[in-house]
Length: 469
Image (cartoon, rainbow, N blue to C red):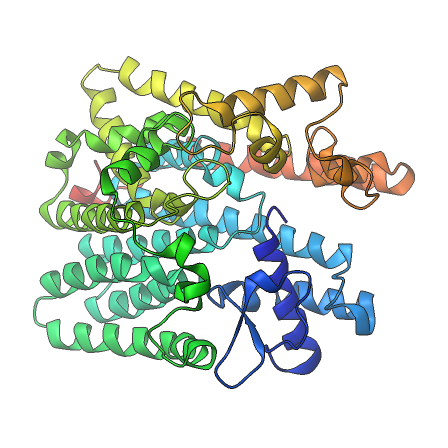
């Protein structure tokens, strides 16, 4: 599952399914991920989105593990949680494509969404169960609703309801990103809602408040204050407290060799090229710029934290706003392509693919924790990217994979070290009917991918008037 935090969130979901409550009595050996509420009982420290998302996996856990499911979550349930995140990743790319298709031609939107899927950290985080990915889905859906209204396809009131729901989705998983997604959405909708500003504002505020009320109640139970997150309690001050070293944080988040977003996905740096925005209709340009300001403000806040990064692939905390940078990078890429500056598009796209794809077929978690220097956020060289190629070479040549000895000796976790690190590969290795199932599933997925891409690429582009760049 790539994270003990995610594992404890799955435990909380198992507890909810099996007992109807989320307060645990004995959380050893993962007590660091739980907080004791004012009324007693231990609660998982993170935002509650994963607890709800993992309910289907928790049902599997209860059926397979019985009374011991909370203490030792069965492997089948962990697999179910991981596959749930694969669906979330697919939904995120689909939502981003829908947003891009409002601004760009369908073919350009398809190309940009494919790059976002395979040439940004979204590719890697689809293979984990970290809550930044559903937050990115919420961001993409919020952008889609707002852009649809800006293009005249959705009424202001309907767009306000959809945008509020989507922003709340992001907030359920990463409440820290909520203000920086909701504020641009609200400002854009209210600005453009001619004759319906009060109704749009009221609908947006009401839906957002109703959707976030359970999160506030959950915070109150855990901390005694609905507006204080459990992760901001004193026991986490060494991680989530403010250090105020914004310059260091921004350098680390965007351009440092071992964590920077524009290093791991160079094509996203095209978001800094503003010239393509001039060709957008004024309402779409306003919406796009509003979301970019929101993403920049969010990055500034994250940069000020004592721990602006975690030992994960690239800038984990920027994943929720990758859809925003992808939108702006795509607009710039189309402008560069049409003005015969195509190498400026092709080069960063190829580099992004080269830096990202290996981490999609090896166990990137053990690259981050086991390859020398990969865990250091301010390392002077891209140790994580180098480590992913080292792991790829080990897999191709049959050498011992990266990973601690206790994992290699654990019969449940050791298969996760093998190459390629894909569920279908593990299914294939079991032989017999499982091998046949793996082959059938692989063929089905590849056929569906080719059919879908061909259908979109060859379809006569729809005309949306001035809304298409």
